[in-house]
Amino acid sequence: MSLGILAVLGLAGGLGTEDGGLPVWQVCAWVVLAVLAYLHGRHVDARFGWQVLTGVALAGTAAVALLDLTEVPTVLVVMVITVVLPWLAGRYRRQQALLIAAEQERVRQLEREQEHVAERARLQERGRLAAELHDSLGHDLALIALRAGALELSPKLSDEDTRTAGAVRASAVAATDRLRQSIAMLRERDDVPPVAVLVANARDAGMSVTVDGLADLPDVVDQAVRRVAREALTNAARHAPGQPVTMTLTVAERLVTLEVGNPLTGRVGRGSGLAALAERLRLLGGELAVTAEHGLFTLVARVPLT
Image (cartoon, rainbow, N blue to C red; front, side, top):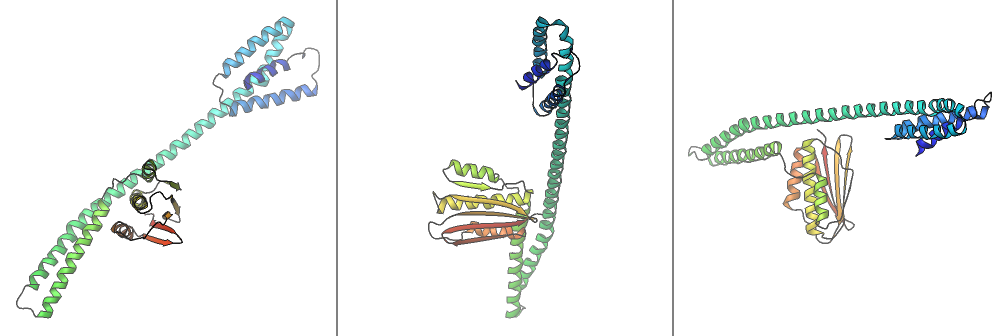
């Protein structure tokens, strides 16, 4: 519609130009019309622009020919100069800008793909190192525990030496268990859904959840954040049913912070789920803080970006 109006004005601007010199106002009007036509082509996606221009030109030429056939070439030239050519220039610039934007988006996509490839490579290397640690250190610790157990049963040792051997065996067994748990966490590929999916499922179940600041995170950190969000939503549904839950994720200074809060409705306990999460975050260099004060239960998880 707007392009058709500009084309009509272009045709009208060519009327009466055969009488002599052009007045200043008419030249200024042509300049303004050319600028408007350029801006239209630059910023407006006119899919049927050529059809509109052609239709206006044919209809306008027919109308001018009925009045004065000699003015037909003039009005067509003025329309081409003041409307068609500026519109084409603006359309060209628009297409050029769209191509540049598409190339920039393609570059960003390739960069994201390269980051994902590098992240997968790091995870594969971490899994390989975890397997080597498990095979070497686990075997050595098992041998230490076995030999300490043999010493503990030896009749030649004094009671004090026997107790020392028993303590060494217990320490080796405990170290083996901790090593196994740590390596299992490093090698594990969690099947916890993304935070957005967890929130959507909670809302479908009737919970009132407000989320702010979701962002793409490295895989290991993202898995930890997903676990924290799942545990927090589970606890809120179990211990504070019907209460609104707020969840805020922030990334600043190479530190990811997930804060989840909901009103208190009863006694707060620190279950095994939170304890396991705290241990998981500790192994990643992070921490888990739980507070219950002023009628609000708040869970804050901090994980450094690796």
